Amino acid sequence: MLLWVAGFIILLVKLTIVLGVVLFLAGYLVWVERKFLARLQIRLGPNRAGPYGLLQPLADIVKMITKEDTVPDGADRAFFLLAPAVVASTAILMFSVVPFGNDITLLGQRVPLVVTDLNIGLLFVLALSSLSVYGVALGGWASNSKYGLLGGIRGAAQMISYELSLGLSLIPIVMMAHSFSMVEIVEAQKSYPFILFQPVAFLIFVVSAMAESKRIPFDLPEAENELVAGYHTEYSGMRFGLFFLGEYVHIMVFGGILAVLFLGGWRGPFLPPVVWLLIKIFLVALFMIWVRGTLPRLRYDQLMDLGWKVLIPLALINILVTGAVGLIVH
Amino acid sequence: MQPAAAGAMSPFHAGVFSLVVFTVLVMLFIASQLFLAAWLGEKKKSPEKSRPYECGIIPTGSASFRYPVPFYLVAIFFLIFDVEGAFILTWAVVYREVGLAGYAQMSFFILLLLAGLFYIWKQGGLDWKEAYNRADS
Image (tube, rainbow over all chains, first blue to last red):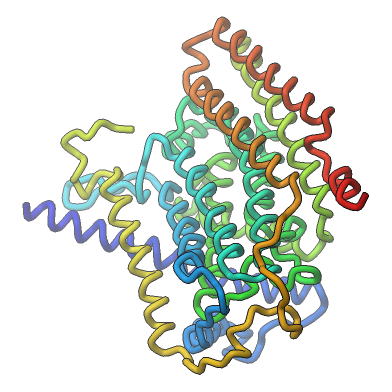
């Protein structure tokens, strides 16, 4: 019993650290994005709150908490209030299957450095990423705003379309690792990262995951110059903040999952595993910001064509080729 | 998933228990943010403020308008392809065990899926421009 309590305290500390690090990094990712994007556009970016604007995330939180939380007339109150929480919580929960190191030993017990090692880990990620569609679609629908509804519908159609190529692009990884468990997928990349063997799956995954996160060049659900802010037009204060947090946590989760599936997870020479995972996440995030600073927005039919007419057939053919090569090699 | 064995409630086991605790922590965090916002936030209601934003123009008509049919089509295609994707996933974990016979059956299934995709493509189910033209005429 005493051991159980001690273990529970260790578990709580571990999970709180994970949650804290995820939220802290998501907050500072906002700063990194604003700063880096500003430099790409030959501006300075935030530079008033603290040195180099480093206190900007804190200032943003204080501001969002003290702003009024408005609910528009005729809105479906329950769904309107729930939608941002759905988006933020599904994004954070997706991080729970990302392993960040080997087991360590405390009190003579093995403490795994992962929140949860589900042996359906990959399906858990896909399921949560499907659930976040509800946040977008309901948030847009419930706000009784035409911009909101248009953004919500566009978002739902875009996210479910790219959900398909996302899921199909990961099947070759499952075939190579023989498991859905993220820990075992990292284990399977002991000698080489999967990106060397699955460059096509890697490309499909990157494009579909960027479309899932609804960022430029796939930001049609919130296209500013036609839909104001799309599905979160009517949101203010902390509820808008939760949508925002969800987006940045999503970038981090995307970096983490990309690292686990294709780049060997926490593996790397010299530095400790957690540092390697964070480096990989950071590089992926920088890449996404760079893309945002570089590419223009797609047209809606181009977006759908890319998903349905290019990525899905390519992913299916990739599965066939991987299966054939795998059987010949063995 | 691991069977609900001895380690199910053990805090040293990275299983469902750990996930439940993490979920509770996440919910507590989000609830705390919303509580703080409700407590410290500004509260001044006005009819101007709570009107849905349409660039300053007073909104006319209902916001729940009809939207183009292609969106429904996308939803239906998604259902079909997603269910079949789940079928491929179950094969992917054991593809070495089921060997050539399994691969032959699965490649037939995937080719059928591709044929279906090309069929709806040919039928114009994936066309967005067509739909807009139809709506115009």
